[in-house]
Amino acid sequence: TLTLTLTLTLTLTLTTPLQVYVYRNGFARFSSFRYNSNVKNIGDSYVHLTNAAVQKTAPGFDVGAGSKWPLHAFKLYLVAKFGSRATDACFAAVEQLVIHSLLSVQKIMIHDKHCFEMYGYDILIDDALKPWLIEVNASPSLTADTPQDYELKFGLLDDVYSVIDVEGKLGGALEECVGGYDLIYNGGPMRIGKGSCYSTKLGCFDDRVRQLKKLRALNFLLERRTTVPPS
Image (cartoon, rainbow, N blue to C red; front, side, top):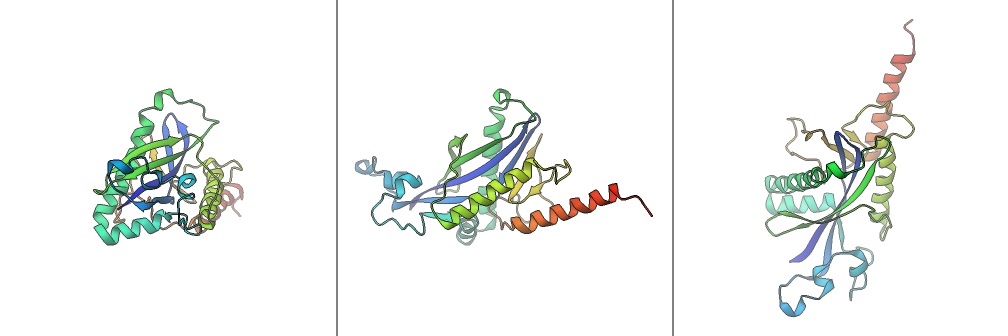
């Protein structure tokens, strides 16, 4: 058994009412050495911590792999090992953990419609697939250690600006999916359509480029309809 934490990123666009977008992709980070509860190893950071700054100094550390799995790959592993129902329950619990942590501090957040927040979540998954919140980072790290890390964080930042719609390309509409971001809370929990076998899109396949092109094309057509007079 290895120590495992999930690293997720979310964007807060409004605090009243609370609007939360969570990034569908992320990383499952592992320790370099197998976990054990021996008191003699309680201070062994390579066993108990999954931070990249710690693990990259471990003996035999694989720089190419970086002790990380894409969240999508980790979800597929859990489906193969525990089944789709247990895996979906785990990821749904992660989503609920995120929502309730934000609701608990909603009253003391800065209420400004011209601002947004981006938070990083570190969540521990135990052997019963139960998530435990470790910490919330107000300034999540955006440095990249591997090509996969760079690709994820580049896409994440690109999608942040699409969510807040700085250039007004979405026409001010509140979209349920923008690139790799999914709206999970808008004054209340968002629900996935009945046709889906999952209750959350967290960790699902992420074709963010195709989704953005489709979204912008749709909004372009809607804009044409409202600006071009009928013949």
